[in-house]
Image (cartoon, rainbow, N blue to C red; front, top):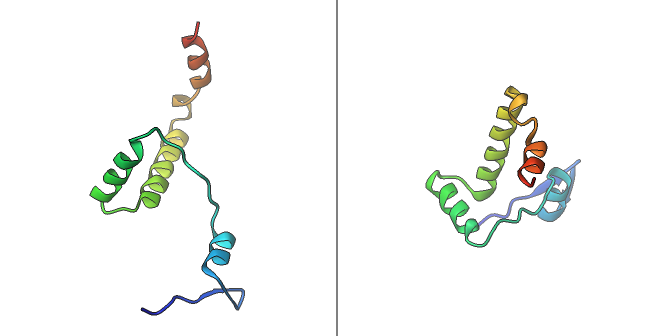
Length: 83
């Protein structure tokens, strides 16, 4: 297997250095058992978990931007539910 060369600004760098320069990362926490459901859902659609999560976020943001009123008042609704 041939190792992929990572080049940034004409300089050979490690995969970790490349990923740090090109991508933002954050940790997603889900309830116990939900991780397996997410993995199975992504796999059933031929996606990686990362690809599925990115697609889900993009689709949700598109929906929210297309109908901004749909997400308005969510904080108020949560606060009122506790009354």
